[in-house]
Image (cartoon, rainbow, N blue to C red; front, side):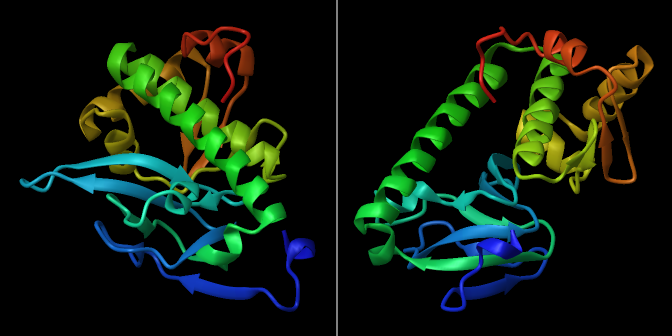
Length: 209
């Protein structure tokens, strides 16, 4: 990631729980995430939270802002985040615009996968799909080590991303650990058998993550 930073880049930093943008706020820039994790979420009137996207190193937050004048969901840092700030008018330039469009396509495909998971899959299938997706994204960013990677999410974060309760997530993770398909300990994810976890997630061979 460091090699991709130009001297002219506008580096910004966010602390855990700090907003990159609030709900119904007009974003002024996109953010290329260099380090750290963030999430997009929506709160219901009673305080319940649904995480609608996760941003990892290498992600653009958020390509949807290039099309809409407002962010309907809030985006908040889950860890310390370091990012390059890209003004929205810059993102519309020819080369930058093409890159943003590609990121937008990836975002839409990922949202479609999440929709199917939330609507049709069992708790174990949902967790398997989410954790496999996050591992693959970390691997593409060069941040996986063998078949393991950092996973700085709490069980509440995982619950809010999968539409489950934290208790249900805990029980399901224990069952998955007993099956030997993954181990999640001290915010570190290890997947001994990627193929077995993919089968558990009810993913076809052509399904992308």
